[in-house]
Length: 613
Image 1 (tube, helix red, strand yellow):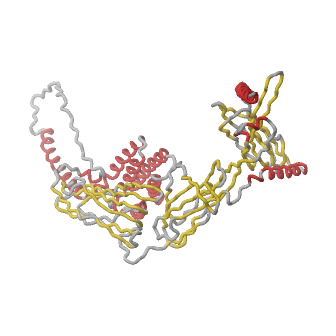
Image 2 (cartoon, one colour; image 1 turned 45 degrees about the horizontal axis):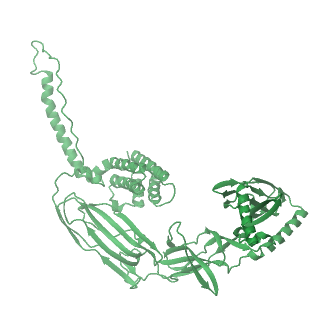
Image 3 (tube, helix red, strand yellow; image 1 turned 180 degrees about the horizontal axis):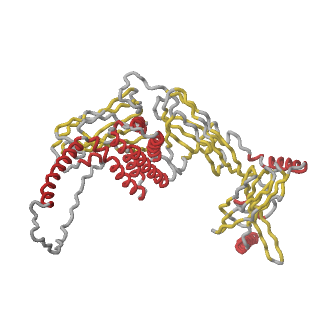
């Protein structure tokens, strides 16, 4: 009973003294060392703490650390018991070049409050024979201390596995990188991603997603396995393709042995009483070679563009009866599993009486352990300009079916579109407007009648046969002739659609840029890039009478050269187009990128317009 009472009093005294004691957090290290010499930097705190943050040891090589340890002591003076506990974090460093180096304070949290240690200044001098001898002794001592903490290749390693080592070109392959460890790991960092040359890849693990962990027995040894990375690869060429190793730095936290003393404090199972050492190790996954087989050439459809997997194809039209100049939406949807993100176009041919635009493409991609699946839609806006009955022929989509081992062609139904006569409200200005907005006429109110002072004519001055009389007689005739000339010119201009678009190209582009500026202010990225892209491509289409479906970088280059535009401006225009398409999906500062692209679009259209005048 006395023994238990003593332990209770002892524990009470420990807590009482630890609460009353001030927190002391100090750093210690040699003030001068020789080049190449190894030494220890120790950070000590006199109470239990958490969230230790080490400083930057710039100028030194970190050999190991932090190595955690603790110590306890007790004194009885004048009937009072004084107990102290110290926890330390030790780093083993190696000096490099000569000079004076500063080590900034470390940080630690005690009771929710952050404390900083003192800073250190270490002078590195040229090594002498004595320092070399001392260094060798320290090396031997450190090797003895770390003998129990050596890692071998069987303690921790990375294994790369593939779902299919002999896929077809375009077939989905799941690659999983598994980390096997038989020791504790405090953290790991991927230094070098595996090279995927010859593949299109897609990460299957979401950002900041916790890796899947489980236990596995391998060659009679128990391991904890973490699936640290999983990607879906789609080979873009046939032959032997190599996946280079994944390189990872791991920090293994190993418990070292501690000599026990006859101190009474060894009675307690204090977790801080053990000493831990962090051992850094760089590991690499195994090389993997995949033998990609080419797709068969026999019975290959003409409209095949590289789709491989298992897909379905359907189409929808919002109406089959409409009026001239009214918009109709025709949507095609591809669903399934495979390289669906690589499908970029369909071979669609509309009747020449239809005005069409590039489709709006939407991706809805699902990522799972089984790979990539989802849907892709192509939404076409078509506007019939003349009345009559028109036929939209079936649209085909071809892909290589992995389950059947052959090419499959899917087809949409044939659509018959009945177009009635329009109501005549359509303005010619809508021919160059993607949104098909009508012109609004704004009238003015009748102003008040202003009464002027009465003017009296002089005697014997007649209006008949006067100069004003002749002017008023001939002016209506002149205005009538001018109206006829203007009318004929206007009708000729309306009949020449290309010339009309040419004259209004800049106006329409300016309207688009103004709309893009609104999306820039509201940070609506997708809508902004759509308006910028349509402003640039629409300007080129209207200015040079090139249909949107035939526009490309080559046709733009040829059209500008035919108009004798300077090569500098041509290259800048093409660069702006490429930048706009790339920035839409690239990471980085979105607002700054959008602002730069907006300025470039205004500048290049202005320069091109000046060149064409």
